[in-house]
Image (cartoon, rainbow, N blue to C red; front, side, top):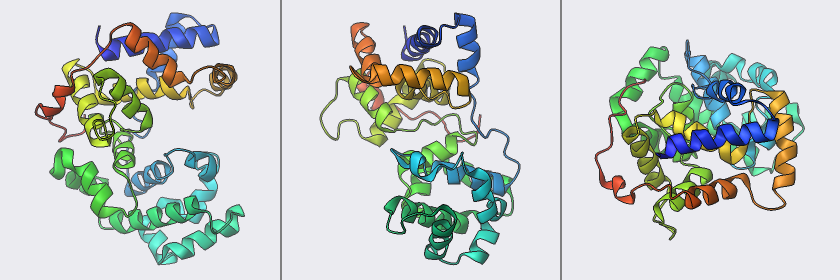
Length: 288
């Protein structure tokens, strides 16, 4: 059995055990997460909104920024996420930070908000160059698989490669995965390469994308199934999320969700070939 099929079946069983739902009910819920959150992009503003979400999507930052909870307040501050209007009002990130400080009563020295303000201004500068969403997608497609690297290293100051992947996959680039800590630790377990540097974010990205393609599944779907297993965050379903949070609290006394899953992978001899890293990267040129 391949990695995706094993992981999907594991997630269904875990969801059923946790929520006391049937297999069919679990499958119906899980499948709603296997499409990008913002798959119907109609404007640069929509793209900018997604970037605002991705800029907070690392470690503890979502619990500090709380974009989803305060989206309407952010929408007002950021002029419906219009890049040009943002830059017209806030020429420097310090000005935006002052506005956040005023609106959210934050500690101005808090690095999370400083970095977030810088990211929004840098993203606004970048997106303001495009006349519409098609112009942006044409530009992104012209770089192919290299675009996440280009976005992180050249266009948006302070953005990491993993967050660039997070942003792009959620606006429809389903041939990408986000190589976050969950994916890296899983890749280490799958390959047996546990030394520092053996499975960094670039290696993890390559291996999981190529493994998904080899198994005939979109990398996005593999990414999302693994993330749901490791995080237990069914953010679209409040009732299920509340049940799962209680279960996680009890479970955390022993092992984390990720550790339990990795144990199952090892017990069932689920592996991937580390040498797949050296294979040719599949074409990630177009949205699919």
